[in-house]
Image (cartoon, rainbow over all chains, first blue to last red; front, side, top):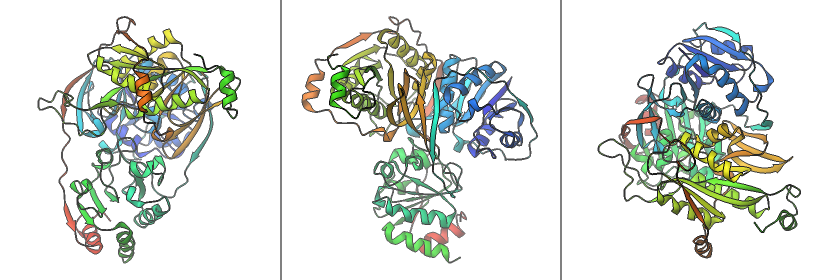
Amino acid sequence: MAVLVLVDHDGATVSQPTRSTVAAATKLGEVHALVLGGAAAAAAAAAMPGVTKVLQTEDALYAHALAEPVAALLIALAPGYSHLLAPASAAGKNVMPRVAALLDVQVLSDIAGVVDADTFVRPIYAGNALATVKSADAKKVITVRAASFDPVPASGGSGTIETVATAADPGLSAFLGAEIAKSERPELTAAKIVVSGGRAMGSAENFAIIEALADRLGAAVGASRAAVDAGYAPNDHQVGQTGKIVAPELYVAVGISGAIQHLAGMKDSKVIVAINKDEEAPIFSVADYGLVADLFKALPELETELAKK
Amino acid sequence: MERGPRAAAIMFPNNAQETAEPMKVLVPVKRVVDYNVKVRVKADGTGVETANVKMSMNPFDEIGVEEAVRLKEKGVASEIIAVSAGPTACQEQIRTALAMGADRGILIEHDGVLEPLAVAKLLKAVVAKESPELIILGKQAIDDDMNATGQMLAALLGWAQGTYASKIESADGGLKVTREIDGGLEILQLKLPAIITTDLRLNEPRYASLPNIMKARKKPIETVKPADLGVDVTPRLTVLKVEEPAKRQAGKKVGSVQELVDKLRNEAKVI
């Protein structure tokens, strides 16, 4: 039986976490992709190597990916699939447990490894332990930790595209609006470089120097939970167990002490740089390169140095 | 409950809910290893060490209790019922909720593993008895990190769900919920009854005062078993092993910004 991946897209391209989810799905069977959106998004999904078929619907009912109608649609499609997967994005985490409960199965959240068709590895306790769990349920409903799977390429595939029928409208919720921060910077979970600031930044205004460094490096901006709690950065910048899980090529932690919950969100980064004036800060225990310095001196210097070449 | 809708509306004239009946709110609370504890994987790989470890209410559930108490203070909620599923000791977390302002508690006593699907089924059975109009849960528990119970309960009840909420307002006979999503915020209108799951910025939970802790001791806690509720809680997942993730080696300290940039360019080759 084939497996179905729920696609996150921006109308034109498929998100990188979705491509990682397809990578996980290919270990389980023939991959079909469900696209709630238009022709360009469907074409982008069909171009992922490994995807043999794209199921597409442009029905306005799914325009804002409300959990109740999307779950109803997945339930209508579920009989044809052994596994239903979505990236562990805000959208995927919202809808997949609802789907699982409707199928009377236990959802497998945030998997970081596929052992076999029934057995998966998932982090627990903020990533301080890895559990290998075997599901006894006939059908598996899964969200995938993108940082744990190398994404499939965005092109090279040639899946077919077909339209799916609209499922029932539960009529329980309505979309009123959204405030999406406009940013030229790369998306946090897909960025090759992430620069994050912590509580030591001291104020929301001071966060501008993190942003300046990020722009110099073409990086995404992140923040520790402490910085978010203090109001220095918006919540969707939060890196950590209660925020985003990232694994970029380079992660620069500035003024971040390195609480367990933050480390859980970034310790799989390839190279970690820590800049902190407290040389005892736990962040140095995971950093490849540590600089003990006052960030307000070091960051302008760093920008100058980076500008030299 | 003595506090009627009229009195509440007079006390809080700005409240949009003035004409609506105040509602019963259910707040599920989970007993978890305290967030400050560094968990250790058991040597035999069967789980993590929980003996002689400080246990607390799941932090996201505390935010849920706080939100319910604030709704009651505004006259939107009439009664708050705190419910916990797990061993007898979960009474401690129910007492914490009672000290924060919940009115009474229900303990669903069970000593084995309870997965989110089973907890959702247990809560659905409680809903059938108590008929709340609103259930506020934490978005995820910090032990199994499943991020599932609220959505699963919403599915089983056929209710609307507003997950990762950072703001809840009464509006048009339902709820207007601001949600934390990737890239920003989203605002949804939910019909009641509804499920809310809390995100960090919804509120800052209060500390229970000593008098309220004393008062909470006299508030009632009813105890039931899964069998009393007619719910099969058999786990669907078998934990084959639990292990520590690969440890990252600490690297080197660099002496200057110049050295750092040089290493990143020429050694790590990441910029």
